[in-house]
Image 1 (cartoon, rainbow, N blue to C red):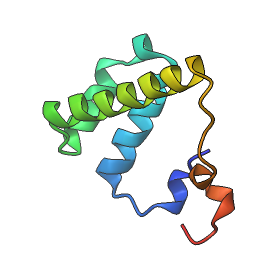
Image 2: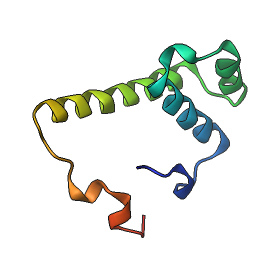
Image 3: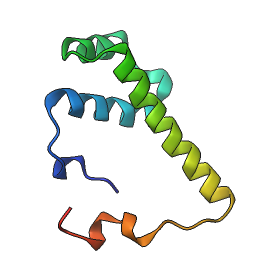
Length: 84
């Protein structure tokens, strides 16, 4: 699993990351206050749409690979290389 703590993210980027992780599990659970908090950090509508589309693309690829029984590449596991 991806560990965001191992990547140097600024407050805005971390908030966007946490937002897309949340909507990945509950897209209907986003509040207006959460969107307002992202905007207070300077997040634009374009950045939100881009982040959501990146999430969507990843999910779509996972579904495609699962449906075709394509395994994950070993290099994708963070545990395999502690230098990341």
